Image (cartoon, rainbow, N blue to C red; front, top):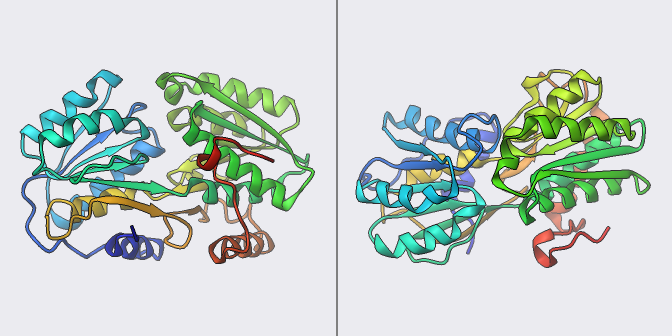
Length: 338
């Protein structure tokens, strides 16, 4: 399925600093709802990006929305049913762990539109939004290798799952594109959902990587990533944020952030999916060409990324868009052949 045109327009508009103004064709059936994944609404990363999208929609339209923060996996079906029974439309879920709950609940409410981010659910009233995390991660991996003085860069992921391996693989390929001899250190904070909110362990893994020579560390770990950024700042090395722009958290230490425009996806879902006139079920993929993923450059890291570095990473970005550079997708074979 081709990308939703309004979503693509919204991504391009926000990338250029312009507010999204396209409203849905028909009136919403009810207030929309957003359910955040484990790790907390204000994780300054993935969930907070979803929250920011909901808030942007509210500011743009003057509308109200419902939201809920999961505390455990057992609440997924319960939360979906509660919002559907209340008449919320659409119901948006942020996170890859929603497939089984949504498969169970969506058929029970055929007149409710559901939008899920980071997983695919094949139901007639479900829209699935996926991002090309591997290509965005490729770009920050390239920047990491350009910036590294030791020739060693590291990755600290959250939960040890295929999605986060996808981030790592793209990052590794980008670093190798710039420096074929770069040394890579890969670690994860855990194998359970608690891995998303464990900054202490993430900080310990970061400290170990630094002791092993790493001077740039990419955190793809939700709330745990704050421990990576803090430890890197305390150790006078560079970190890379994820999902939201985290450059401001430690100016001069956060080299860049791998942007994943969950905020725009949520804002556009609220705008469109409440009306059957504009709702498009099925899968939508967002990548570099749509500004769905990318890297952050602002006043907080402008002194860290030279004009030459930016020109090189922009050339790599265009090469990926044009098909001249292939970034291995971990999802294609559950492997990262380096």
